[in-house]
Length: 424
Image 1: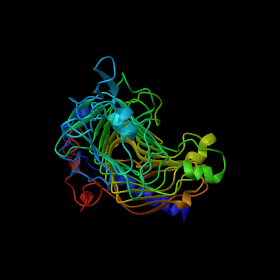
Image 2: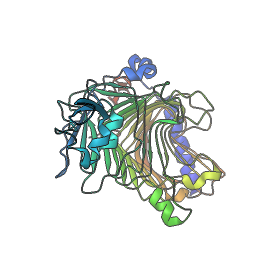
Image 3: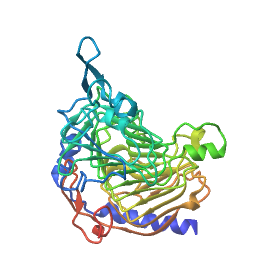
Image 4: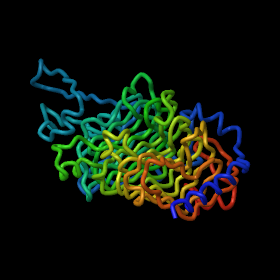
């Protein structure tokens, strides 16, 4: 049966080689300038204004705001003003009525904070951070507190306004955080890590309707475990990302120039202790030295960091050496409804799906998807003892319009249009 499956895949690949793939010139040009995106065609941005939980608040951020406040101290220096960081009183209720008048200006739309990083540190369960339009050159995400299942913390762009984070966001244990509608752009003066956006651990977090672009590291978006308190299975489960969602994003243009196969748009190393996550309805484009999604550990020594219980559904993936890479101890991975097309810099061991050193291949499923342009629907590492489960993969020509730069890439072909992020 194994040989029959592989013969079927090889036959499909032969048809792909003969197919004609049509792509507008704007897509190729735009890959190198994706940070100039308008992205409105795709819907990057917040569709509505979330509501704070009962007893929580809105926290506004704007480029004309301030992270500092002044209060009049009748007893201080003969009636002078004292300047302080707003974090000090916004997180400490006992400092809200110092001196002779009320202090601690709330971060309202008329008195916003200046930096996103301060707003994230100030936020408490149930709060909604609303970021006004503009560019914020920041490293954000450190010092946050967790939300709860009944009081999530939302950070979003103000509806109708374009928010650019020119820098990086790194979140550790962002339980029940929701990040919606921001544009994250690589900034060489700020970015020092392996990705533009990273999530380490955390339960119930959401990353939706954002764009991420321009990384020169291993990924634009990286999902890993947080540091565990011990090596016990219970501690490793607690440190793993659980019940997360990456949905409706535009993640593009990994510009890494190192060894082939190491630079991806999304890199998932959530570990075999992860109890579930979903990556769905995203546009992923431009990873010529890697995969649009890599769901595996970096090497056999760290094989346990391979993801488990992950669904990859209804994504459009173009312009990468491989569509999805799975390997090592990856397990219980379901790939369905995806459109994988237009390979870029495809080498011998690349494919629409690429596997290597699989330990649990029988738990990996690739089905109900469309592949166009790749020489191989599945590229197998023959060191693995068995094949992944492959069913109902269609192949053939696919025509595309739009551009990566404004996240408007879409296929105009049927049946290809029945798959991917814009599928009915």
